[in-house]
Amino acid sequence: MGRRAPTTPGPSSITAELYLAYGFQGLKVRRFEKPGSPPINLEVYEMASPEDAYGVFSFEYQDDPAGIGQGSEFGGGLLRFWKGKYFASVYAEGEGDGVEAAIFGIGRAAAQAISSTGSEPRLIQLLPGKELGLVDKSTRYLKSHVLLNQRFFISHQNLLNLSQKTEAVLAVYSRGRQKAQLLLVRYADADEAGAALKTFKKAYMPEAGDKDRVKTEDKKWTFARQQKEYLLFVFSAPAESDAESLLKASEERILMGHR
Image 1 (cartoon, rainbow, N blue to C red):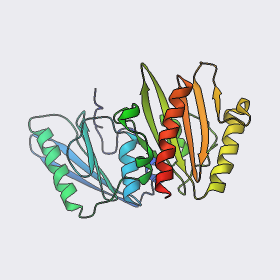
Image 2 (spheres, helix red, strand yellow):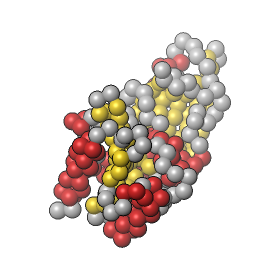
Image 3 (cartoon, rainbow, N blue to C red):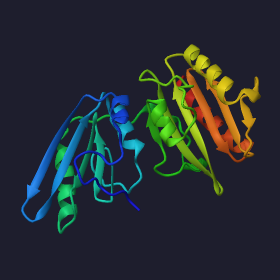
């Protein structure tokens, strides 16, 4: 089931932490009213960059594409899209004839009014695709350990030293009837990545020692590996080979980008 739109202005479940993590710059709100129909709200958030706007959108992406902006979805009466460095949501404060069409009309007009476009984060391109089981709509572009924990809990402490100077992408991969999580993090340089890996391993997988993997109590695998300024992690892999194949595919993409 798709989410239900909020009944008062404001996003349904996104917190201020989300917008601040992605470099919130400003917000414009418009309210459209027509006799006999529920009011419709348009919210347009200006973020620090197109990558940040994509990040806000990706954090809750779960419904079917709506063909608006550079990426969109519509479900439960809520339209969400991103274009350039802007993220927007459109929703009605109720239901009625013609409401859905009006939401789409307002959304298209808002997207057309944004003249600039941008690119998805380059980090997304380093993820293996559906050939290795990438689950549709599972990719999250992250800038905060708080947000990471909301999608896959690691620790209350910021073990990976995530900040606005780093970027991370989390995706889910289907391994038969089970699923594994792949996390890629890019740092300013290899030294920062190495320091974060040391902190992570000491706190999260101390039994691994000098190895880059450990089998957890639930009989699944956790991997942690460095490749230049990147850290690569696999969590909850049902088999050692599953984790290895995901990391190898990502490492190949990283190395190709450094040529």
